[in-house]
Length: 429
Image (cartoon, rainbow, N blue to C red):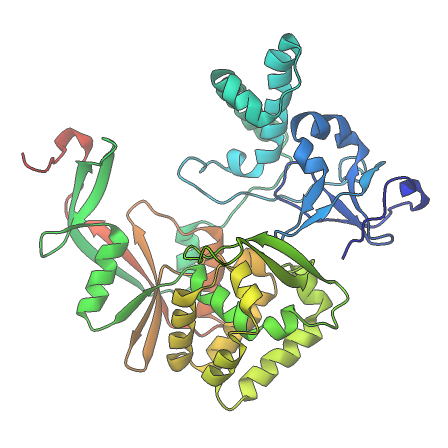
């Protein structure tokens, strides 16, 4: 873990070997593998100090830890070293589906700042942060963002900075044998409370339900016990069963930090911040590489322990801070314990082994639902007609359908009749 060393002697070390510690912050920070300082490249000094002063003070790593930045160093970033910057695409969201938006988010934001400086800050004679600019000049900010996006769309077509080729769902499903079930129901579009159109499926009993709720009802009628899954299950299993490795006092990179409580039902008498002890590279592939023998030993011990549920129960209290860190509370603990009762031990350990190799990239993409019926279990991802599997979801299904040997399927909820706004159905009419 980085120790605050000050900035007066930064040039004593040449910083020839550095690693990025925060791929998803605008101002990149680097850890020097020789002196262990956390540094920002000097080429970022003016921009970061002007637009994002808070990011020049602390570094947020992939494990969401926060440590002080030791200062600026010359020529340590990828650009200054003449190296291609590895892509760090953002997840697909309804307002962020385009590849340029997702891959060039950093370049778009930087250009937006520069345009804002020219359009407002310099002319106003003021030095404002991004938040202040968005508040004072919202329309100017939107215009600058649109212009920056168009610039990088054109630039990407001419000379791409990143390779943005991703697996498509159709070719993936042809190659990976994932069972697909279709459910059909009448689809209707109604105005929501905010007056915007909202699509819902009409169940056999007449209820208007989301696709996921309709799928849950379908499986419940078949006798399945249905739970919300996604990252809840794997976070619970990892935070408890792997806590002896995560919080191993013999790990030289272990540190204790603080973060706000993630418990939504926190008693007001309990502090709103918690202390968490974990390695500073927690959740990264580098952490797995550095601690591979410890993880291997731990997984072997889980495979051979007499009672996996009892082992889980014995670690609930010792793993409290790790559970708090990953937002694992009573509901998630109950889900994990229930899963341990029915999922084969080999599959459980396979799940842990797969995700711990690159936790922050693999704890997302898990299916929507986890279901139990007698001694059966199944993971189910719910999709509608136009929904696509994300890259992380494809990675999960590829693992589950192959080495993971986990029971899984995709259920597609499709309309019996496609309704549009031109034949809008309004309740009461």
